[in-house]
View 1: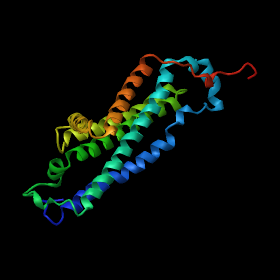
View 2: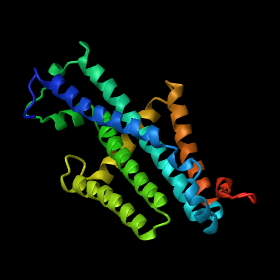
View 3: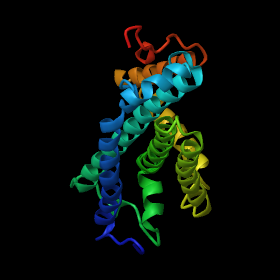
Length: 242
């Protein structure tokens, strides 16, 4: 994109966020469409196999099914966040009240400019989009393993193929780092900026408190559900008449 000038700053910044918003919208649509795929009753051809292998009482398979659901929920939430922030920043850049003319651009690149003036939004869009994509890919790996549960070798092969894609994305991201040193550092910076933003507005806006409470409850109940599962899936039981 080259060096910024007073004339192209807004256009290039808007293009950057729009380029993230479009694929995030596509991915969010895919997530909501298939979010509950593993919660449906099993196919008739699998009922006997599932009953024989105790699927209704199997903690590993139960964990897999609901891990898939939670990963899809996480991916959807992150991509929706990406869409919202990208749209909000694009609107802010388009307003006449904002202008980069009050701050010298010098020889800044577009990324340098975004880190300087829109660091929170930049880390949210980059971090949330990539994390959502990784969550979606890992969820699909679990789905492949579940769909091919009757064929262990093929199921593991398909699952590992998708996990290879996920780990390869992280590897490439870390090797060709643009800022912050890698994926983990990017997410840590995003968490730090987001927490500062929420804490700064605690006494001004109640939504900051609600956001923090919801985040705490998300983590708390996820851990509780993981270590203390509360149910047996009765959909896999075959009646005596069958």
